[in-house]
Image 1 (cartoon, rainbow, N blue to C red):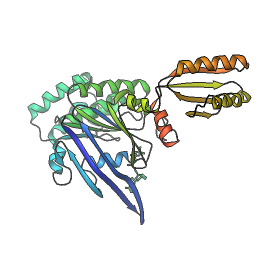
Image 2: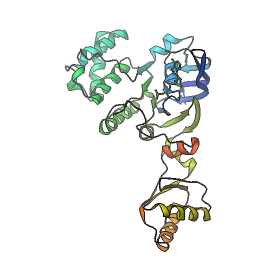
Image 3: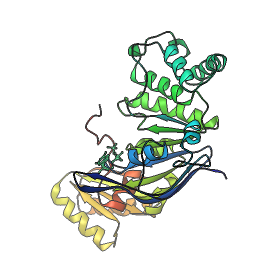
Image 4: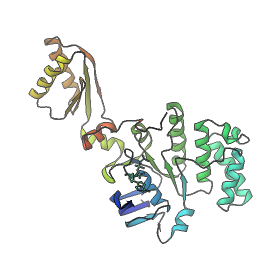
Length: 323
Ligand SMILES: Nc1ncnc2c1ncn2[C@@H]1O[C@H](COP(=O)(O)OP(=O)(O)OP(=O)(O)O)[C@@H](O)[C@H]1O
């Protein structure tokens, strides 16, 4: 399969007031044509830095980067012609209409008027904002504005679309709606590189992803592969009374369950024999009159993956500016 993005031994060090900050530390990865590829990591992990390098906006310290077969250092112009970039801030002028914004993007990309009109027609239907074309951008909801900005980013039919935290600030319903639209773009052949710190987003949207922390790749695979690596199932349980937690801890020790975590009377046990373990827990709690607030069996989440790899949580909604 043709690799639309190929990154080899990429590093980026910022020098700020004589202090060196290694933002990206010798990372390598490739992205296939037609996939939604995610870059998941906490704030400060190096996601934006990497994305700005890949979109020719930032010089880097060492390594090689090819986008659509072109070298970002020596063939930056060709790279730019083949990519679309929608930053966190977006680029739509609030005081112009949706159509005017898109027409301006067409001019900036050097498209003819005919092609611009045709693309506006196509994309406004695909991204479900055709009826909004005469509206001023300032009157749009967050989700509607995002769809218009994505259309601006792909008006020139690029091979790769870069999306930086596309759903930050959107409510859960608008977020899920935007995911559907991003999937539609992928289904129409677009390759999408997306940075996110939302676990749920990475899980629902990405065909493959990298988890990045402190500039290093700590895991790579499909969401299912990553979750299966830690265990096939997770048993979650919460105690009603603190004194019972100690009894449960002893019980799990006897069963030699080494992949169990406990915090605030909540246990997560990573296991491949979930149903059997649930039966054992029910029998034990009945026998010892232990009251449970809840007990459930599920697939591990990407948060479990992050927790297992780094010992810390990467929770959704960890950023201050979020609503
Ligand atoms: N211009 C800069 N000068 C100095 N350090 C920088 C600069 N830009 C980023 N950094 C540092 O590089 C590291 C990676 O930052 P980056 O913005 O790439 O992270 P991120 O994963 O995109 O975070 P967020 O999710 O908060 O946007 C951080 O430690 C950050 O403070």
